[in-house]
Image (cartoon, rainbow, N blue to C red; front, side):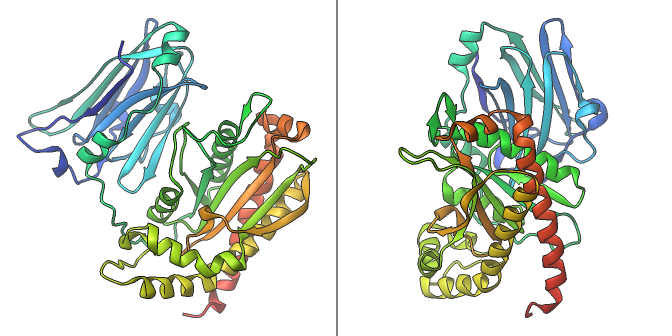
Length: 402
């Protein structure tokens, strides 16, 4: 049984994998997910071959296909998904140079075939994947994200992030599901923080995209580990205006409950730029600026200047989220607005907040976080706050110094 088909690089006319630099586009009319008896068949036609990998994840069962890189413009869940063996489908950009498709599986299915064929004349590529039923225990034991080392080397990820294009498109909101993979976060009563925050993040992202005024990008859409610095890199690559990190802590003692929203404390601001300069590549400190060759002092000064605007914007966003959650009927902590030294909020070039949506150590909070129905007010509150904040920031824009 194959758990994963990783690093499948197919080349046409002697072209090496690293030369695939143009964006591949999905041919929607010739792509489909369909049933073949008990099997699930996935056929994706691309305008050119790209490096890809395929693997399965459990709880919930799903298939993940990573590409470098595919444009899904024009594709829809309704147009592609025609299979009872799959219950849902989502796809889109993952980070700079990366795309992802996630297929929710109706039952335990394992990859039995995966291959990409390239047409000699057109150079178009056809990715063909077949999944067959397996025992639940076999699926669980073989599920898991692949090791990154070989894939990263073959895909030749460029650490320099290009400046995001300036246009009138939707505001980019990065939703960060806290923890993941080897870092499950808090755990109480059989509930893991990483799992419920992923569910909440997916729901918030879907609601954001339905507004038509904002577009959500997730730092993770499955149970895998993303380092803190990389979460900010993903946001910067996406051209984020907003970064919202979702968490649900647990305390050993005390009866803490309810939601609170964090921004970076004044004390943390003093050395946040220095920590960023130490840990990040110079091409990944500020969107639109390549600081390679510059020393820490120059990089730190530029980041501090950026925070003169993003710091207050973060505070206004945090206040808006508190108001939005309260209006939606979400239980708030006795001190809903907080500041702390949180590494995930260190980025200087976009507004950043951490939403502690509740405490897994509270029976009430844990129950509210464990179902989509009781998470719905949280989703409404966060999305309403983002819309209100965006409107307020747009009104402030003419007053911001140039």
